[in-house]
Amino acid sequence: MAAQIAPILDDLEQASALEHLQTVIERLRDSFAVDHLVYHWVNSSGEQYGCGTYDPVWVQRYIDQGYLRIDPVISGCFQRFHPVDWKRLDWSSKAARAFLQDALGHGVGNQGFSIPIRGPNGQFALFTVNHSCDDATWEAFTERHRKDLILVAHYFNQKALEFEPGRTPEPAQALSPRELEAMTLLAVGYNRAQAAQSLDISEHTLRVYIESARFKLGALNTTHAVARALSRGIIVV
Image (cartoon, rainbow, N blue to C red; front, side):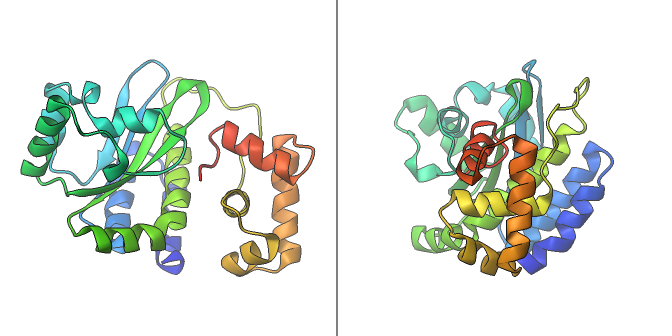
């Protein structure tokens, strides 16, 4: 999958407007062979932006009904830092169950996996993959693609932030895609040999990426760098 999505991420890097993100997310949906991919953010002033492959009728209904206040995916992920399967969220309230039935009736799949992202100045975003299938199939999919989805989510958010109105540049240097990959793999528990093998690079090259990321983050050592990257929402695991 990494080889399949690499050209799409290259195109994402070249995107020059929010509208281009829609084309990218549709290509990513097709690459992962799922029903829907959705990116949804709320910026520091409470304004929302989203792009994805849900039916536009459902998107408008979601806004008109004020489902942002009811949606267990939003409330549940806001309290978490790690990716979450929708089955682990609280759907017990009458309002949540009614919302779910309405969503299913508008083509939203019965399975979901959402990655919370926290950016600068109070930005909160979600990157969600949604599909219709049985639990066993979905568990196998999320287990196989979890790391790819986390990396894609961060690439997507990093690009979207470039288009935020009135955004002021971050004082810290941004991590490169390879630095993000290296730090994310270390954060999820890979040792250096495993991380290098996963990225198909030498341990020496991996060490260069890690040291560069550590310098940019102003960290004392690798552990400190990973902690800083997690606390700032640069990576999630």
